[in-house]
Amino acid sequence: MVGLLIGVADLMVAPLHRAGSAQGVGGFFLGGVHLLNLPGYTIAGVFGLWDRHQWTWQGFAVATPVSMALWTVVAAAFAQTQQLSGNRTSSAGVSRRTLLAHGGRAIAAAGVGAAGWGIFGEARWFEVTRRRLAVKGLAP
Image: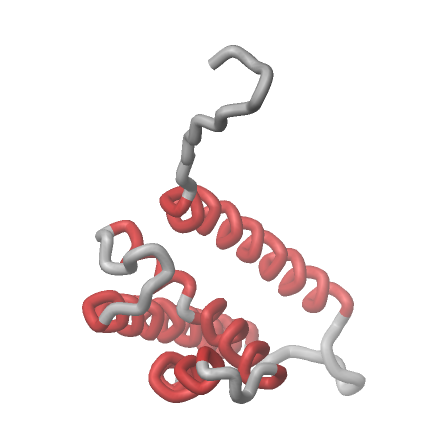
């Protein structure tokens, strides 16, 4: 499912969005899918397969399977924890303890993901440009 979303976003919605169509909903859809594909983008960026936010087939070929593998492992781990817990919830729904435990894990995972993106992904796009400007009345 994640692979299908990534393919639709990168191959169909992104060209429409760049052309000026589907700006509202398309932008939100692309943003959400790019968050799903963030692990793959990061790995492709580390290996130099993305050129300054420019989409490449090599980057797509690496990013999509990496993200699909990660989300498959996440889904399997989630299914395993559901089987181990036996889905023990009260008749009213999710218990407070379960909500706090899962919410804390989600917040911790988001923090780790954001830190990883900041260290491995975004840091590679930082560029320093120095320019000399001549200002009238000042020494060079």
